[in-house]
Image (cartoon, rainbow, N blue to C red; front, side):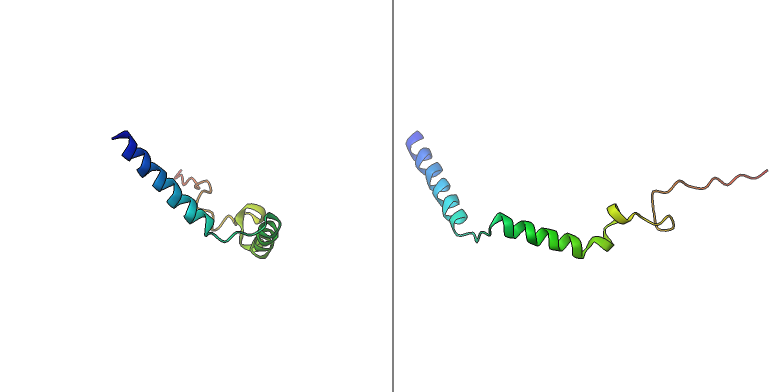
Amino acid sequence: MSGSSSVAAMKKVVQQLRLEARLNRIKVSQAAADLKQFCLQNAQHDPLPTGVSSSTNPFRPQKVCSFL
C-alpha cells in the first residue's frame, strides 16, 4: 500500500508543478512599479494617510448627554 500511496503523492506533486509552470510571471521591478502607481493613484481615498473626518468616523467617542 505504501508504494501506491507514494505514486499518488508524486502524481499530486507533478500536477502542482505543472500548474505552477503555466503561471505567467512578471519581474519584481515591474510588480513594484505597478504597486507604486496604484498606491499613488488611490492615495486620496486611503484613510491611513489622509485621516477620517470626525463626522463620518464610526469609532469617534460618543457624546455624553446629561440632564441636570
